[in-house]
Image (cartoon, rainbow, N blue to C red; front, side, top):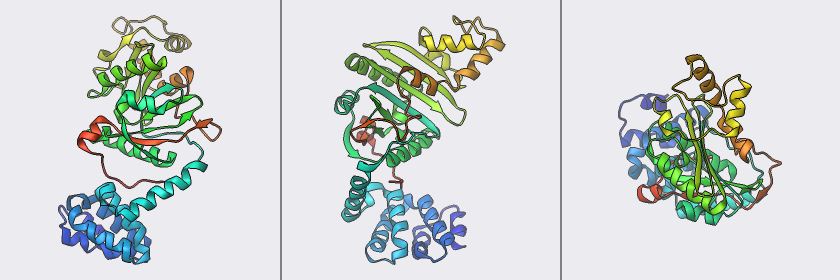
Length: 329
């Protein structure tokens, strides 16, 4: 009850939030969960005052509060808030789980990824300017990407700070995260430049956006240092300004299947035909990715895996830092 009351206050101060710490170990799971959620929601502004007390709970207990205290520490202060012992324990758990983990479809509400053939993870990271790789499980990498995607959807540019670089999956390596968005106003030109460089080095590179909540699709396809196509259909008024190159054979085939002309100029299309194509193109990115290689949205336990996945910092993350959060391992 107290946690719910404080959660709905406009500006709970540090003393009110500290009063919730004993409730993290409450026998009533709903009370304990509400205390945790309230601290996660309001605690970042008072992290300096809360971290010492949360670390004490981690050391001294009570035992029922320890797991929730760890979640709050990670959520309000990130890795910097964790003790050396807790950080080592998290890394040890990842090392234990990762070798036996099978890949899972890397779905998020907002999906952004770059796809490169082969398994030269180090070379791909070098080309993209990614640094500080840390081992992660598929669950952890996907959870971070999903969380950052929500931040990007809310206009938070800190979502560009990090990416999940997968192991080689059925002959392809994927870099996932909002930083890879080929149609974002801030990122689109840099993603085009990077995919051009990747394709010059590896023969091919593709970048995709797919909004799984009905928010559209975008794709960028480059080969041997040349951009063949960039196309966006996200419902934004300036989508057409990003269009580059001629329609891909896949696009032409999909239009023909719908009785539309494979050759088209949006300015000359009838309203009905243009609406028909926009409806089709909204969900096209995952299909196109599969047609041109492998889609990370469709991998599974039978996918051939070589290597291990890592979380890496982008140049933006190095300059500005990464968001905080508690994630599944």
